[in-house]
Image (cartoon, rainbow, N blue to C red; front, side, top):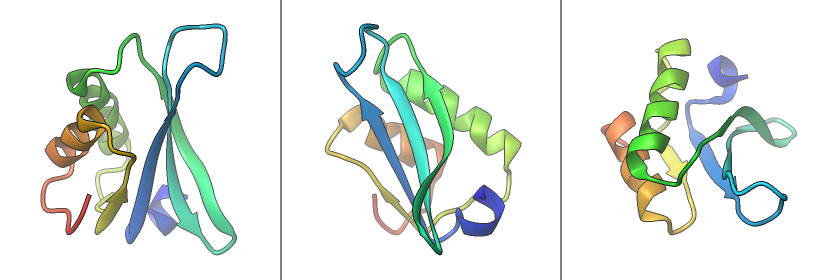
Length: 93
């Protein structure tokens, strides 16, 4: 899914306070021909930019040609910073 649909737009979102565990669950989504689909998930012990960046770098190593033009995120500075560091040259974040 990432190879086929991960180039124009990607979306990152995290669940907060929706489970009994105090661990944020992040979802990476791409826009397909039937809507947004989750292509990767990762759970971290914190919501720091360095932790998010490390997870995104693992995904980038698994899919080195992943180079979206746009990346959608909520207004979370840690997420935005991690995305910009992992995927330099985005048109918009």
